[in-house]
Every structure is written in structure tokens, then in C-alpha cells.
Amino acid sequence: MDERYVIVRTYSAGVFAGLLDSRDGKEVVLTQARRLWYWDGAASLSEIAVRGVSKPQNCKFPVAVDRVELTEVIEVIDATDAARQSIAEVPEWTCHH
Image 1 (cartoon, rainbow, N blue to C red):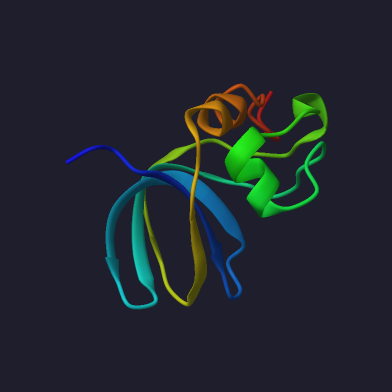
Image 2: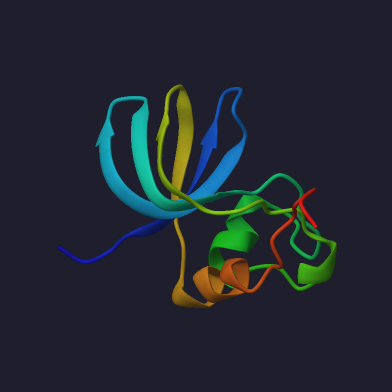
């Protein structure tokens, strides 16, 4: 099975980007997942999924986690290779220095 890189919006946990491991109704498991806490340089999640972000230095995407289980998923958007690369290039937002 090919890796499916997606952007997932949940009801209350926010937005995540990662590899779709499984989906069961409103529950999704992602691997290699980053929370998209704040973004700049894209008008919507749809634009991020297609083009990525044009202002990565202004985005706040924390460290990737190996696996996350998300409940109350509202939407799952397939992302392009360009979008995946763009998200990966956003510097890790952290409070550890």
C-alpha cells in the first residue's frame, strides 16, 4: 500500500499532517505526524494540501510524533508531494533551546 500523506482537521484537537495509518469513522491514526498549530502563507487547509506554505519561517509546527490517535475528525485531505515537502521544511517550533 502506498503511503498516503494527509492533513486532518479535528473538532477540538486542531490540525495535523502525517501518514494515514488507519481510519474508522471519525477516528484516524497518523504516523510521523506534526500538529499545524499556526500557519502563514496559505489561505486555507486546501491550499496547504496542494501547495504547502509560502512563509515557513512564520509557521508554528511542533515536533513530529511517531503516532497519534485522533478522534472527532471533521475532514481528511490528501496532500501533494510538494505540500509534504513544504511542511517538512518548516522549522520545529519549540520552547526547548
